[in-house]
Image (cartoon, rainbow, N blue to C red):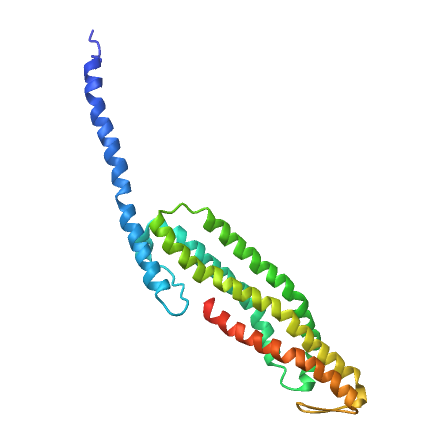
Length: 241
């Protein structure tokens, strides 16, 4: 009857250094890619975003995702924010500005009065949604554990692509209800005058100076606010795409 030969204690001790070496090589082999991935990612952020005079948030190719490794997740915070921002703005501001641009006569203003009022009431909710998106992105950003050299570049990119557009968007949503409510107020005032006002296309003729003064008071508030809103909206369009 044969008995199995058990490895001696010497053999077990002799094998241990080789096992340890294999573990070391395995760990070091995984870590060798990180410096190259980090450098490639930093070069991308610098050349494709920071060095551009206008805001650009390019989508990564499959090759770039492979080249950047796990740092694609860091970039996904930025692209995810912009994707959600564009969805929100397309569903809110696009219809608003289309409605405002459609007011090309006094009669069209009176016809669209109710729709404009609904937009004014909804604009407060739109601002809240944008604030939630910014908070979500800020929370993800704060949780990142990045080497110092990457963090310096990434934080600049985050400011340009997330923080600055959020400031512009917030200003737009602050002004929007003011402008819309003044437009509605103007429509209500014109309608309240009944036969005391004559409407000819874009022209109004009031029966007396007192009525004209009240109308002009609304206009004096509306015109500069609307001009500021249009300027901000143009800035925002350049920053969020």
